[in-house]
Image (tube, rainbow, N blue to C red; front, side, top):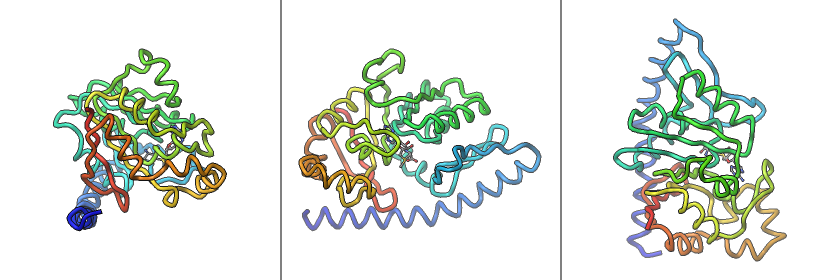
Length: 260
Ligand SMILES: C[S@@+](CC[C@H](N)C(=O)[O-])C[C@H]1O[C@@H](n2cnc3c(N)ncnc32)[C@H](O)[C@@H]1O
């Protein structure tokens, strides 16, 4: 990597810490306002299944929503890379649906679909949809190939596609879902066919950064491991997208991938 590219990366990381500090203060303010409003009404916690420890939880009080500090900060950074007008959003690996709920609350967003392989996450997301009366939000227990095989049911394509911390599971599989595709060209081509404008992607792109069960699988499949590198990802992605590293989410790059 050139010196200029490295300097830019360091600057982007530094920007993450700056945003974290400034937004943390904003988050504390929003949390106080939410708690004040919540004293007068019932608060619903979207945190099931409880056994899945995760920061991807949120609370609903009437038409107000509040997530954890980390998720709110992620939302702020991710949405800074949305198109000027977000007209539709697909979130693959949507967990309990925070990004889809927030998108469906925007008047300009006409459709928002979140899919995940854990049915209980989809149940939790649907509970949020019901409480907030978000008719534009759709949540489905579905895999990548389900979307591909029934594009009409899932109303594909969407203007914007989110793939946050999930790409490595599509390539390697996960404890939740053994189905996987160790073929970056297939994955990136298929993902490109599901969006019209852009994909925003953050995920570990080196085996050494992936969870330990993936490292175990990589030892058994050195041929897949050889292909799972950031440089290979960027090379293949450039066939379908113009890719730029715009921001960091914590320690990981968040890529803006504009459709070619
Ligand atoms: C690390 S979490 C990230 C959740 C969410 N995108 C976020 O940023 O908070 C990974 C998510 O991917 C889902 N997942 C795991 N394997 C998957 C697969 N093969 N296809 C789709 N989603 C998958 C998990 O259920 C989980 O919700």
